[in-house]
Length: 119
Image (tube, rainbow, N blue to C red; front, side, top):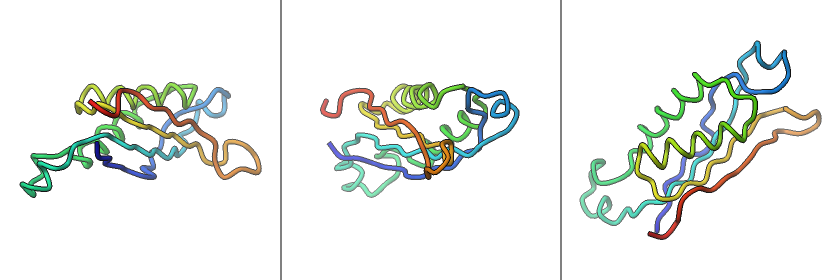
């Protein structure tokens, strides 16, 4: 199984448990790794034969911009659901990072895997 990836998709959203976080939009960084078999796409050299990562990015961006979760865990879980259910991806790894959420750190976050990598 091959992997199509999208790294550091930055989206502004409301996420956090503190009252002040609920009033502002913060940037989160999202990494996606998505299982795909790209042999047909490579042979045909056509976008219709592969996972359209631009469409995935657009859908995830739209969802995240509109969301208002308290936890990055919830955000990651919902993103994984969108990728697997709406795009037919059998396996996905989603990492959501929240920059500067802890003093002295570059970022904090979560990485989850959903589905099965091999069919």
